[in-house]
Image (cartoon, rainbow, N blue to C red; front, side, top):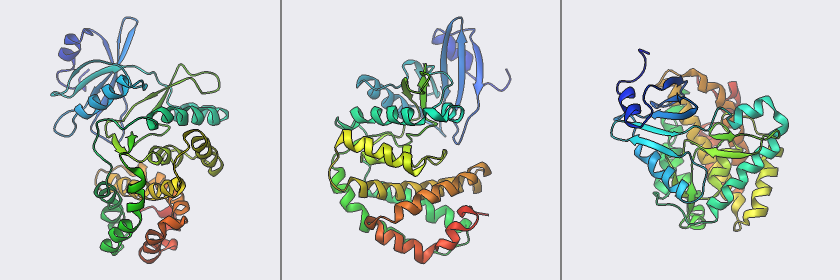
Length: 329
């Protein structure tokens, strides 16, 4: 096939998968490309993360740590990180998101299994990953003022925005301590159902975890339950948060931290989706922005976010946030 990357055949031959059938898989928001590889009865997934735009080494680092510590990452069959090639276990086609679109009755069970998968991750020390610190939280939150506000032709107090986050993040950081392993993009499109049962449960495999950090246990809960790409009802969010709290028994003020991280993550996502539209010409992300704003509006109601909420009211008033679902034009 003429659209296959140069070097794919030689890599597969070196990996013991020569003369395999190669089927491209549609991509998303990055330079990475994926292919399903079939050789006889065997199948595997091939990730092509070409330098300099991509670097597969962080994926390999996190995957090996997850596997060594009993978590369901894909097995690594072969790699050539310098050239961007990684051949991994094939988890199949059953993304949690797609499964639930077809069988919404499985939602409670599937989310409960996804919550339960976080419990051992959060009960152990963080892996050998960088810390999710205040500069990182600030850098991510600033994507809103860097991309969304200019797209909306809003001239905002960016320094005041940073100061508002500086007022709410230190208590969270103190409670975060050394942190736990945070996958950072843990949601229904990045959870694979491996041979799912009829109720949508069964084993769940992890993908897209290469940006893992040592951070707060509430972060991946926010990612899962305030999903930018799939509607999760407030009742489901509450039920799953209660399920997590009853099993993990986190420290006091956990729900305050959940709200702070919800607002921080959602501000980041609004900025990223705007960037994908304005810079990368991907308008489909605009339709997800109203869902993100709705979740952020709920987060901003928590008293722990009062300085940030005040900044929003002064700089991006509710009427602007709600007009056209908060989408940039």
